[in-house]
Length: 234
Image (cartoon, rainbow, N blue to C red):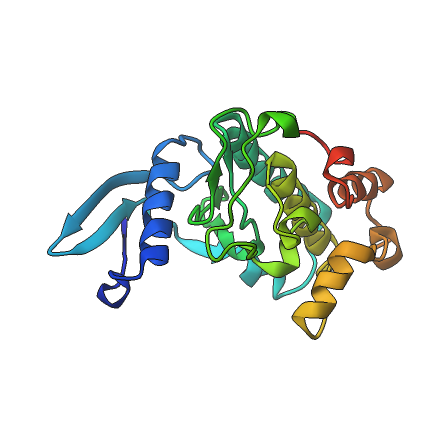
């Protein structure tokens, strides 16, 4: 197993403590072969800890450091990420920080989704209509954004509520990066990344890697649509 602890110096940090507790609560509600398993939650002499499945391998971020993936590897990894997201969304959980660094590629070949510290519980199926959901309050200051900027959906960047389609945007960004070896939205500053997410379309996958099927381009493009209403619902 792996033991994850909240370092003593962060014990009085309310935000970090809430994130740690949120991760424990969220993972304990999920049981899926592509989501890291939580075995126990505890506290020892003032230190909170989680006992989790030990994953041997590398992150998808590490793998992408070597360049784009071959189609068969892209599909194998992409399908397993999709299975994990689907299971979480059916339980009413939105990850909100989906990125290559939170996807583990194990030596056994299994893909595991990790780090649910920013996850949001909707209390209902996450792909429910917007009017049926509770407005999302950012986890930090009022109006702040949570997550990792380069993989955020437009509604996340603007501090609006997140639902399953928010994760699907990040999923599209990961598929794009696996296919091309480049981030879908990038820039030298945070402002430029935000502008790219809100206003620009990434270069077509086919213009970078002509060997990939057109259908993959169509799927990725729909995942990365600016309007959440036009993305896949699940």
